[in-house]
Image 1: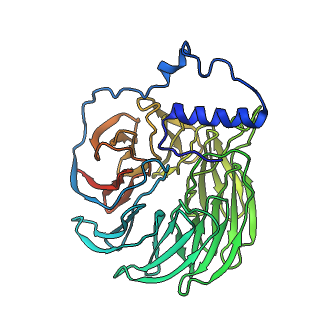
Image 2 (image 1 turned 60 degrees about the vertical axis):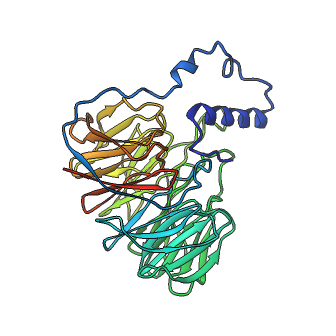
Length: 396
């Protein structure tokens, strides 16, 4: 059971609580919905405090690439390859734009409600649809190369490489297609828990292997050629008195750097893993539903409540916390230079110093919520909001 991340935090809790009540047979949960509940005031998003910028951030361009994500809880963001930005939206199709100028290179119109992607590689741009459609386009021209179908909606960006297109659907299945023909090569299933958060991210490609974050709190390594599982490792234990407390989803794409894989769980756990053999290197008690961002000496994660943490890359020890964005539905982070960048529910983009987590700058990318993690390429930070507004920034 999944609920849109675009719902407010309090509404998501209410819906999840209702689900737990229905499953457990309980008639009420005392205090949660009382008008006298003092937690209502605490549930409001933290008001942004004034800051003194220590860096200049310029908006380079913005472009409209569609819309329709408002109530679907999609973390739809762009991808960059060879100086082009590829972006898509539920209503709007797929766009290719010049990274430096934002000028449209091509636009592929489609009746498919594009909900996952784009993913790019091997001359292809691949997107998924709300009804399980998979569309592969020529990256140079936008012409359709092939189409395929999976059994459930696709809200994660497909991953392209090593002669395959890997599509993750919301039912926990990963399907591998031949990148040249679209022929299905294999699929792999992973059972879902009774209750999960809405959202999953793409899979991570390594040399001959694939890493998948699962809704039960585990990460699995699969063989690229046939989907055979090579190891399975719990990042967080799904412990608790009910299904809500046991939610441990690894919703963010794991990050592979050299031989180390970094994965984070909404159970407030982040782990560094020796990727070839699945051996844990360290585990930290901070983590969240989005992908981690890896810098030169630290890993940055966003927790579900909006707290942003930096962890020591070699040990997992907490280096700093930024608590000024609590309950603002903060995105997963990205790292550019010596800052980490996150977006929030009001379209603000926050630039945090990697050294200490202090606010270095604040910009805005329209007034709508940003759900997808910012994307960094060639020193440019790209942010896409749920209204399909794509904005490019550069720090001066």
